Image (cartoon, rainbow, N blue to C red):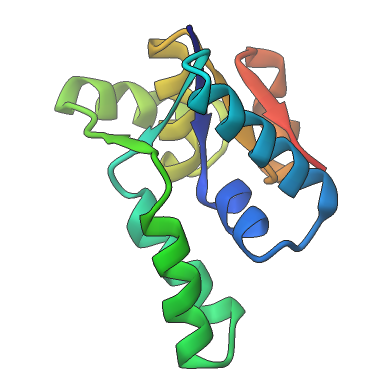
Length: 137
């Protein structure tokens, strides 16, 4: 079974239908999961990051709540990283010159032997050579 690790940039762009390529890829991943061919995961801060991104992307409070409700219905397993895994992500973020937030998603992809799906071009430019990462444009 394939493991997809998704970050807030990918999820929010899909929820808000900002780019058709992102929506198509997200729907493909969810379909694979529905057919028991894949598992969609993230780490435990994803709901907070999504809520925050929606809060500042949409002006209307009702639109934010509606989009977050759509998010809450998605079957994304949010995993908690242990202290050792967070320390590893912290060290790796220093090496790459990236945030611990972004590196934690990527670390999870490495741990689960999956692919980290992101729309964060800046992170991808710094970490793409490490593997287990897909930039969705």
